Image (cartoon, rainbow, N blue to C red; front, side, top):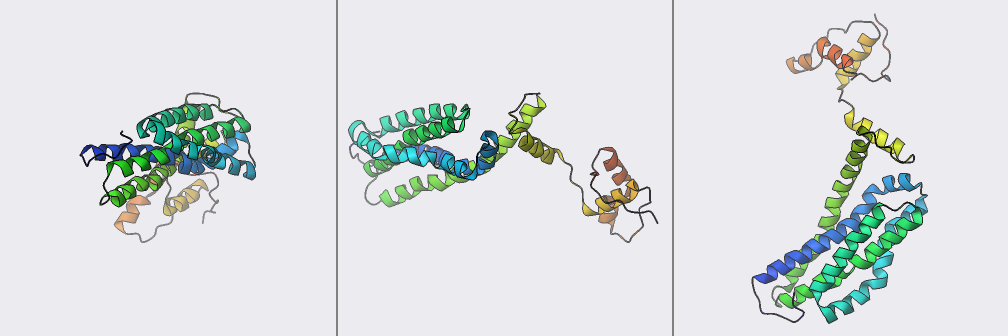
Amino acid sequence: MSSTPAPLRKYRWTILSAGVLAQGAYSAILLGLPAIAPAIQDRYELSLPQVGVVLAAMNFGSLATMLLWGIAADRIGERAVIAIGQTGTAAALVWAAYASSYGELVGALSVVGALGAGVNAASGRAVMAWFGEDERGFALGIRQMATPLGGAVAAVALPTLNSRSACALRSTGWQLPASSQPWSAQSCSAQSRPRITPCSRVRCAILASGGSAPRARFTSRRRSACSASSCSSSMTKGACPQELPQVRSP
């Protein structure tokens, strides 16, 4: 990635793609972390103000190094800044994943923000160097689009990965931290809970109380969905929850 303005080439789109990927990866951490804030709060037993400090830790780190990364991009070039910053960010994320205390977690995330902030200056400078005046606005729009895109993808993916990893660890007998066990057990039970339609709830309640399901005028679709046989089979599989109201038989 050259630090001096270069003539328009096809390679400029490769430069833009690399900048978008780096910017999206950093934004995924910064904007996606709040999506798993409840899990972080349970894991480290944090108060609400402490959760706010954890979520702001990356911003604290980036404020301290943003200007320095811009100077480094002018001195050594965008390629070196992005490579060093992203590699250091990955290592700091591993440290944050194994943090055992609130203070260590805040420190690790601050380092993540400090090292990852270089992508903002480097990717913007690369676009300015590789694109002409008639394409810079378009290229900068694509590059900036990576920020909400990375955050949106992470906001959907991180809670799913967190719940599935917790359920996988529980299924293998791995002992989770005591603070995270109630949350993980609740999420696992919610995922494995079978779906019960309203009509099957009524029939299950009647059959559980010893009565017989009353006959009603159902359409062919409802009749097949609410048949007594399907309800009895769902009761055998444990689909009828214990909290269903008991209905007196006529």
